Length: 336
Image (tube, rainbow, N blue to C red):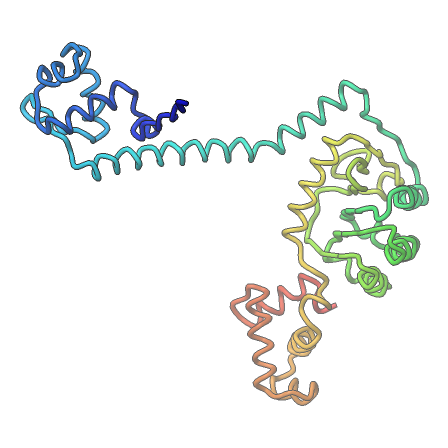
C-alpha cells in the first residue's frame, strides 16, 4: 500500500519569494558566482527573463552583483534580510488593522444613526417643569435599575434648586440601588447654602460628584438610550423654565457621553474629600495669616507636619508658592 507524503512548503516562498525566484536563488547558491548566461543554462531559462528576477533578488539583499557576475550572500544574512522585510510588512499591516479597529466606534455610531433614521426612532419628547424632570429620571430608574445617570449642572440657580428641593429624591434612589450617578457642578456653587450636606449624603449613598470652573451646557444622560438637552444648547434649565428635550437616539446619547467623559476627566473631586481635612485646615488657617507654629499648636501636630501638608497641597494644586496654593485652593472651593 502506497502512502503519499505531503510535500513541505518552500520556506523562501513563505518569506515572499515566488517559486521562480526561489529556484534562481538556489542556483546562485550552488554556483556561488555566475553570470546571467550561466544561471540561465543552470535553470533552463532565457537570460532576458532571469535579469528581472535577479534584479529583485539584488534589491532584496539576498544576492550581490559585481561586474556582471552574481554572488550568493551568506544564507544567514540573506534570510535575515527577507525576515526583516517580512516583519516590516507585518508591522505595517498590524498598524493598518489597529487603525481599522480604532475606527470601529465611529462606524458603530454611524450604524446606530442610520438605524435610527431608517426606523424613525428619533423620539424627542418635550418635558416641562422641574418636578417632571426629576420624576422622569426616577421613573426610568424604576424600569431598569440601576440606571446610570450622568448629569451636568452649569448654573447656581439649578444647583440651589437641586439642594433645597430635589436632592433627597436622587439620594434615596441612589441609596436604594435605583441610580448609579455621576454629577458635575461649577466650583463656585459650593458656597450654596445646604449644598455640602446634600452632596455628602449623595456621595455616601454611592454617587460621585466633581467640580469644574465652567461647563458648556446643561445636559444629562440616562442609561444607554436617553439624554436630556435644553431647549437651546448652552442654556440652563432655570432660564428655560425647566423645559427640555428628552431625546431617545443612540447617536445623540453616544455623543453626549463622549463629552461627559471629557469633562469628567478634567474635573476635580469635592474639596473636603479630595484635599484631605488636614491639608484643608492648614490652608484655611494660613489664608488667615496664621504662622506655621501657631497652626501646629491649634491642630496638635508638629511644625514639620504642617510644612509637609503645605508641600503636598502645593504639588497637588500645581502651585509654585504658598500664596499661589492659597489662591488655587480658594478657586477650587477648598476653603469654603
